[in-house]
Image (tube, rainbow, N blue to C red):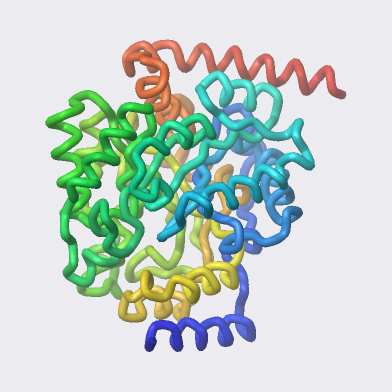
Length: 416
């Protein structure tokens, strides 16, 4: 009850002070060279914006994707359901998104394979890769996994914040209630592997996550798992205002290392309220680059991606948290972060070119950035869904990207 009252109070305060998150975030200046590099790379971000939480009007969604395409963002790991959504919720949200996209059918591709992502890059379309931040959409019926696969689901999280039949989310673990991976959680993992859907351990409590990794390593050695949008806890431990427990959404180094050793990737999210002890009003390109650089030094350049975790507006975030108050019982952590000014995240279309300039300054090569911006994710997709070895993918990717980008330029030239 206290959490509900506090969130409602926050909502009223936000309405009179600030109201931005992603779509109102700052556009950072960048070099023409960096802007062109983003256009020429295959960029796959992460958008966490279920209908009703991140957006309510179809035009909001269409405008967001239009801006992303203009900036050169190829596609998005896209959260379609979260928290305790059920199968009917999945169908509702799927319809809401597809209904909006149907207004501009020529601009979208649901990416069932890397070929769809490549086509989106060449033709300047938006590639959509559905992600579910919950396993509750199965409603304890594992046979629904095949339906989800056919509808384009590419990754799934076992537990979001709270305790579920699969195990515990990060907030439950933060509150000392990490029950670990359950028998049903193991069944869900079996279904994910069977249908080539990635196990995503973002939002998952450490005991549950490590149990899941143990289960994967024992039963499915060589099958990668990922953290699609997780802040590195180690980066903020020495921040001057760091809290004793840190942000419950951050992951410890050992979890990131295990994901990389599986062949998977970790993608930091440029979300300000999760930056423990920092909580900037606008995450800077240098701060975003710090996250990327931290993970690269920890796990290697072949195992790092990017994710903004966009939620469109603070008002939407607050409303979502209000409706799911029991799942945000964090002792006021998120609210205090908002109070300190951390209101949103760096929208990829507005910050990625500037991040590119920053990473170049730090010695990153174009090949490094091509991997981080999309290549590493595609390598994992290729391994899981298409049986292509990481070695083969990495050998062929630079030349393939160059050829695809040349096709893109030719199409743009013809259009003019």
